[in-house]
Image (tube, rainbow, N blue to C red; front, side, top):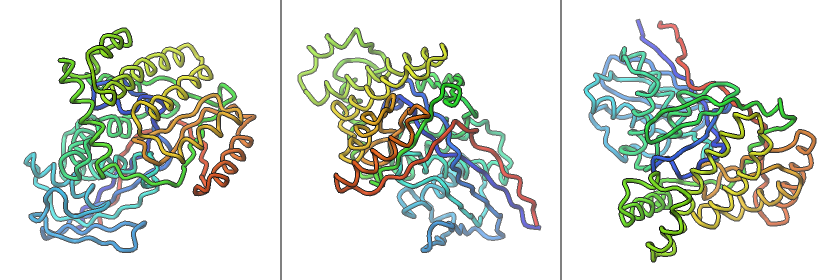
Length: 372
């Protein structure tokens, strides 16, 4: 009898709280109804064979003993990384056939990588009969990205993907890992959350993301704090006097002010004031553009066009350097925003953006696959 199991995990949009999670800061993501499904079938040997419905060049095949950080490359590294982490922790992972159906756009800033690693972790939990919580699996997925693929991301994506709840955003303290589900139903406010994919793909493993993390850690060391989470907006004048490096000062100012914006956004949502979150989104984008330098011409064009056409607020979402914008749009202004963004991109000579209204969805789930 063949033993089979599956996992399904969504992409995520970060409403606000960007580049704060690796400083122990606050974030406010939610899951979206674009999902990646991973199905695993136990083999009788120690081989690992992986293929994807979205990759004509797959499958990738190797033995479990051949797994090592950095190989194989591409999407298969994320699956292999989860297996490697479990084996490093003493789990007897068997040989597997792994089938991937990834419906989260790659490189769009919607965390296709976390969807893939979390779906893989859920499938492996079943075939290996692991007693791991959702948070435990999120940390396995995080280590796969950090230690195997080589992306020094924080824990936001994995915890959001694993634990999100429909019609809620996840208010997460990435220092304590304490979280709270905050109601988020745009349709109840005659508004929409619109994800606009610029078509400009980013690669977070290319060094720019790691450089931002190093700069934040260096600033914390110079300021003699464990992380920038220890600082408040009131501390910024003193920070400015202590940091001679203009770039480090700007990085700190973004992280500290972004943490404040998340707290302010949560307070507004608790009060049922979703529309008032819009200016915080726009302020976040300005900070990411000017202080953290992770925006792009394509992202800026989309944000500016959204605001000019009546959006309540807009910002890049995800790591930046390309990808997508999240816009809070009055329901009556959606078509005007879509038209304005498409025209602005055309005038600028950019790729034609794509548009997807999104609402907060449920997080990852096991997929019961009958054994044969």
